[in-house]
Length: 234
Image 1 (cartoon, one colour):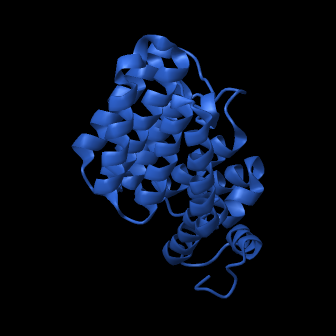
Image 2: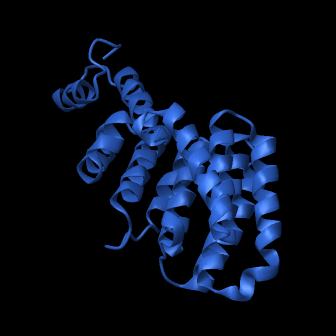
């Protein structure tokens, strides 16, 4: 819901998910609830609390890591979320440490899975690597890591779209004057138009493109009109 521009509904959805997971008796579903809760905490800047939630979830699953690939996938996804916590907090070393552990688990699984709609596997771990570099304002790393992303037909369109939203920002941080960044946004738009139109990062990137371009192009004006940003420094 946050990606569609509705943070209040996102929090409500997380509450409902946790309520249902707790009553289901499904331990993995409950830990996925922690994954969602951490996301809400990250969005409000409560990084320390978010990491406590994630650490507790991993500790709970630790003794069960031999119980199958679904457990491993959830465990790996929890490491990815911790990587985001530390990236948002500006701690690159810890961010990449958690990402490396998630990537190791993804390699161990060997295939892209979609347990509990987490889309965890080698592809998503690589996609997250690009996003983390963007969170750390490291454009060169984002662009370099993007070369290693191989998106297969099983990757959810909204996940692939989000990758291109991240990569657009990465190109900006890498010094692109707009062409490659806007091309990434157009790819994201084609894959998941509703998400792209409402995602806060898309709007931030468009405003940044308008600032770096000396003269607004027709394609940039059309895109900003499509998302409803006309008249705002474009």
